[in-house]
Length: 387
Image (cartoon, rainbow, N blue to C red; front, top):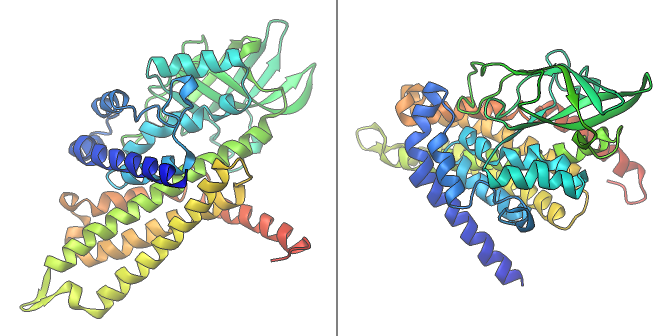
């Protein structure tokens, strides 16, 4: 069985590597410069079974494991993290439905969406709340016929192309707040207003608009799980998408090191000295590779726990922190090795440098990951097992 799983994972990894190099790579620079959603890439991803691969087979997906998912995300991110996120974002956005939805909701919001190769977007972050997602001002009030939603979200990944939004809102029943809840909000619902994409330094082909909700009338089926269960669902959702963020980081660093080895092997700084003969270059790249191997190990641990159905929140936070902070350090140090060419668009290092910085903010900042780890560390220290 272990050999079969290994072969399956290796095949999936190779498929994603080939897709990234042959299909994604020719569109990366144009989509980044034009801030264009990669439509043609998505059409090929759908045709080759990559777009919906992270979903269960019974729902129309590919049924890949979390370990396979991380391998694929890393391979795709080695070519372009932003384009990768546009492809895999559905899995994270629809996690509340997969985890707590009824069969009818799974059919309506997942299976029907996958059949059409549609898109889902998350509405978690608000303009004034930042990382404090629990302080959501967006509000859903219980009515005789369902719910009335009002509020606004920002940085909604894939928001400009989304067919449905998964919205975190404070819930009010009989004039009493009962906590956070998730709602599936179809884009065509009256009162849903999607802004244009914002201009940003990184992840330019991933649209991240603001979305406003003005007296949006929702039916009972739009509430995912029970009213007030949103906080628990949020923690599970964040743990899941942080595994994807960690995989993006490891893929980006892998590509940086791979290209840097070629660069220092060809580049001469003196008439007879290649860069890869210089001790400080060897030390820099060797250290970064050690750190990459450590980040990969943390990522594998988190994915393994997820596949076993065990808690993995601490592990996913550790993996995302390690991988994304490493991506920033590696891109900064390797850019320096390229000299002026490091900031030239032709070499691709500056794009990875920009994207790496965004990874430490998206899906929970590095500071939030350390706070998560600290809380778990304190619990462990107080237990019989200890640190």
